[in-house]
Length: 268
Image 1 (spheres, one colour):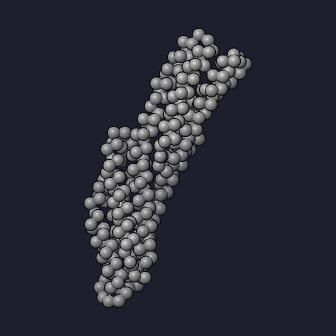
Image 2: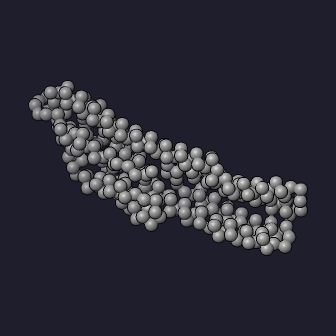
Image 3: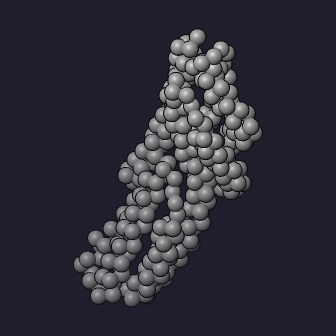
């Protein structure tokens, strides 16, 4: 889902052919292309590291933690590339090519940032939600052993305390675009669980037997809503959005190639 081919190898492939020698407009464009090639050559190693990082990208928690420094370094390298390209003064003939190059680099920077965010977010998410599993077990045991509604309500209060801490931890996270919908869906699920637990606890305290069946059902359904169709749609939408961004990146690469070819033919 997250593996992709890094497009920043485009510079050598797209521009290596140059625009020939000569004088005037052609010479100016050739000088610009040579400058771009020199920038790419000087930064080849960070891009090789980035390509390796994306090829080896895994959702394994330990591997994600190991990838963080390499992805952060690669993101900085792309930002450096962007700054160096922006310092160039392309001749008028090469301005469309320059614009497309900057668009391509910006798109690559965004996807690399998204990949780094994912490597940061997923382990942090795992840490944030980890207390829910033992809290759920404790709740089930407490409800089963409770001698009255007051004790059951107290058990729900304790569970809601863990829910509150987990929701606070989720609010502090910065989900990547790929997982923003999933993050939102998960947070909303916890809100529904918390709300239904509060309502159930209140009914237990006031001994409202008539309301309990519906409230118990609401609590059970809220706990299962993380696997609902809405949650699945959020995951699918995230993947489709990511794939669309990768597709756009490839399109920008083709646009650069077409402009380079057009420029070369024009200035023969």
